[in-house]
Every structure is written in C-alpha cells, then in structure tokens.
Image (cartoon, rainbow, N blue to C red):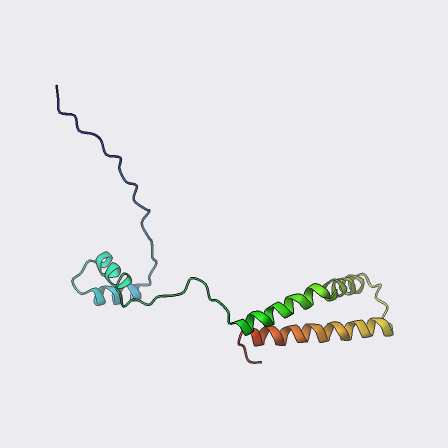
Length: 128
C-alpha cells in the first residue's frame, strides 16, 4: 500500500491591493522605507499600534440630530417642493399668472427654503 497524503484545500488569498502613487509619492515612500521592501514597510506602518484609528460612521451629536429631524419633519409637512415644481412648470409653459395668492405662496416658499438652509448649515456645523 502506498503512502497517500490527504490533500489540503488551498486557502484562497484575497486579491492584491492596488495603490496609485505619483512619482514623487513613490520616491518618498522608498526613502521612508530605507532598505525594507515596500510591501513590508507599508504593512508595518498601516498595522502599527500607532496608526490612526478612524470611526466607521460619524455619529452626529444629539443637537444635530434634532435639527436635522426638524428639517425633515418640516419638509414632510409642507408642500413647498411640490408647489415650487408646479410654479416652475407653469413658468416654463408661459402660463404663470402672478396674483396676490401666488406672490404670498412664493414668499412663504422662499422663507421655508431659507429656514431649511440655515438650519441644515447649523446642524452640520457650517457658519453662514
């Protein structure tokens, strides 16, 4: 009887990671690596305990969530987007009649959009 060894299934290795660098970036990497192979150097830097850790998802503070929820609620309650769409349609068709009611609706829509802009900017931490 012959010696038959069981065949181990090969573990499939993940596809290699590709990174595009400019000539200057590559030269800087080579200089930083010194005599190390580039792959070994990159792994040593990336998997170092000192490597920066990034959160997967930024969790907005509660105040931001409240402001964003308020904007979404207001959008859901108003027909501003639909009304503006209808106005644009009539304007493009040349059938827009500008009366007092439409003027009031337009002023209200402009105020709503301005409020949403300011509130969203505040929620995202952007100063106007």
